[in-house]
Length: 365
Image (tube, rainbow, N blue to C red; front, side, top):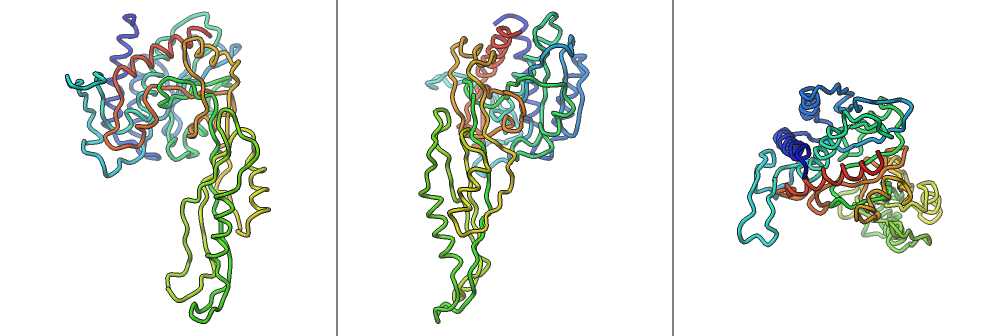
């Protein structure tokens, strides 16, 4: 690690500790946005703010050149009840002598998802900030509302940015390259029947109708399987009737379906098939979070593979789904730690993150 990256790493860890110390639930990220804005200001970088989103451009920005966006989020989920540590106290723990991994950890809410990625990307932006004669411009955006796929995050920010040609989205992937993501569509389904007295075999049971539709969702398999993302997947996640009396046949039953879509189908195609096969009234909550992929021949992907990174398809969604340009997802940390109690990131993961981001961009800039 060269001296400049050592300094950037130390600054990145200190910034991450400030972010952990400051609650930043989705839609409540004003204070962490201010911290990030102040960090750039102290570096003499003119960052802009829209909503709770902070963004900046490299010093030698040239409109005639293509632009790479570095993006991650500074909002977090709420801490779950399993926490044994203070989620807002950044705790740096040395590895125990008997620790088989032997690596120091930084604990705190958002440390892994996605604070480690965010500060590593900010450090990378600083590394290249004053470089001259780059082939690409570099933009950085620290955005809000990722955890709820809100409209006040990257979607709000993109219109204020210059034309973006490609992006690196920072999420915990163990610094492997997610070149594709499943899309997400949530369906609200309602079946209708007719109320009646349960003892007299009256009415038309909407719950029974719902069960038939749920069986269809459970058993239906779409033909096209993706090499990267596998099959489209339906999961029924909740069900309820409007009736709370034991002796009344329900006239209405509602259930929710979580739909994960590979890149081989559009939401419209799936909806047409669903509506042709179920009795329920089906309403999608949103069709914004589409499946995405970036070509393996893209310069960013090729650079990552040359560095020994593995490409894969991610089952989870991120702000990549809201980007109208090619983007890969890559960052320090492990997705399995996200949203868990006593969340943490290994400090050497942040070091590796900065080094690999710099090496990757070195190959294309």
